Length: 382
Image (tube, rainbow, N blue to C red; front, top):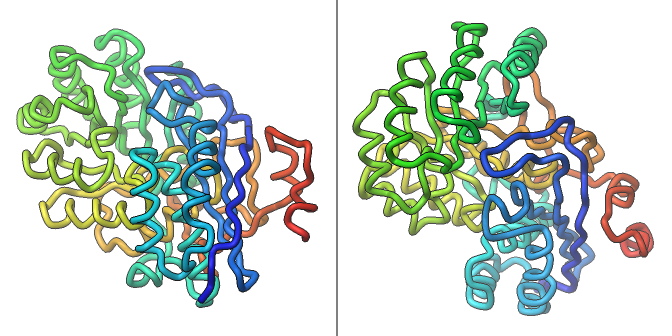
């Protein structure tokens, strides 16, 4: 039996390439919790826990993720059978309530370790990949119309992205619609324009917002109102032709079932971290598929480890009607893996190789570590 010997965590602080303006905060760096699990046979697995904008977005932060793993999840799993991931998931859910990102980070490392031991891609453990690449959106979040237009035109010209999501909700509704309208007019039919409100609108504002966005030709609006307002979200979904996507409303399979039962959204933004791990994320996908709800591969703006893990899962999904937004590494000034994830031809490409198919660049990990008192090289014995 291959046992879990050690679970290590580090917080890395990596600057973003520009201010990333959300309705609740502006991000200028991303704090990544890197997880490494060591097994009794000498194999390792990598995971990542990342939140958006600290605790202004949700209940978890880099500090809480690390603490939950170090103090609760890790000690409970030491000595556990490393091949029995279902058992490890059940145990982690027993010792820690909530904390889906922390649980996902450890679970990812367990799947990665198992797939590496079997010498297969992680996607093989979820039935096998049906795609090698998927369309990838880019978020325009400078807050300035002209800056966003210039950025989008460059992305189209270099064939990196032709799907754009605009972060709105910080300004009055009419000002937001004017901002989005300028970008839509400038790009025309060369790109798909979508918006993410991050729960910022009241129900009344959302009615005006969806009407205005629909009139200017926006394709989709993401989580326009507070996550708990499932019935109100249903009213918006049925009241307008523009597609409505649930995001923060989906905190795992139970939430997915509630939203699907009320038909409160046209699209699910599925995030492995927000779902509580790869397995629970796959269950959210299955619920959407059974309910006839379309899918979108969402992101918590993870760095390379979390993004690669999500790509492995979504490579197994046959219908991704709205593509993905797994662009997290591109928002950072640097990547912590040895080989960057490939973004080309308006798509993100699934890394090839065993596990999540990512190897750490230990020098970069060391450089961005919040606590640099010890060398990762000496800890790793590498």
